[in-house]
Image (cartoon, one colour):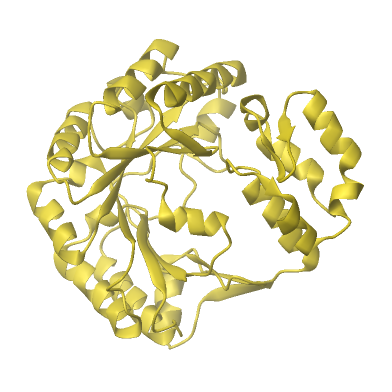
Length: 374
């Protein structure tokens, strides 16, 4: 089984917090789309076994229907997608209308990931989002009518502009929509070389308040428990039976094929590669029938550390039998550290393995790094 990821590297505006690869210059969009289709045709993909397709970005909902068809025609020429379980497209609220929804349905899309980020008008403007609260409400109303499409929404917490009461209000609000089955909730982070980093460094806005973010994370956990959803990964929550299949496959180390500038791929074993994060250089390479890729061969330690980093973020956590396949002696070597984590209330340990508590999830990255092999 494998997944296909397509990166659409275009946005209407540059969000102040974002460090993903994208361009707000749309003039060469068709050329990039054609290059993505060409890369797909140049790549060896198994003819069967495709489980999921995910269009991310950037803003995939910017594409015109003919551009969608160019990419989908290339995918269908390489592999059978008649039995895929999940076809997700990331959309921004300002792009959602009846025509787009109909086009997505015709393509076979059965899941939309909607980038709300906030329902606070001041906050949307501060983050330089391209949509308004009103556009979000319109998009939600239109999508909620489509019972063939399940909906995931993105929200950001721990910002300088959102109070605890507003955060709880956003969580309560989205629960009113019957088609919303999944929530991706992220604490605001200051990434290097972003406008947000500049604003914090120049004291234009205050630095991230970690205590506030921790409190809003706790509000989120209590809300998820109250509504009966599953907290299956640090940033991902869902109604029963609605885990994101494509992203879960990442966390379960299944193969995936990534196409487009900056897209990553993994063979399910020891090979990772990623594309040039520059539209012009990416297009030029593809047009010259070469792959603009960097390749990494994972060492034994790399595989072990990736397993720790990824799996500790999940509900199931680290499974003894899995990690012992990667390093038989690891459990014994880390025994003292794991006991220290448990005594501090950061992890729970049982016969199958160990996993983060809510307290531990607040410092999950730090705990993972300490467990790595150098």
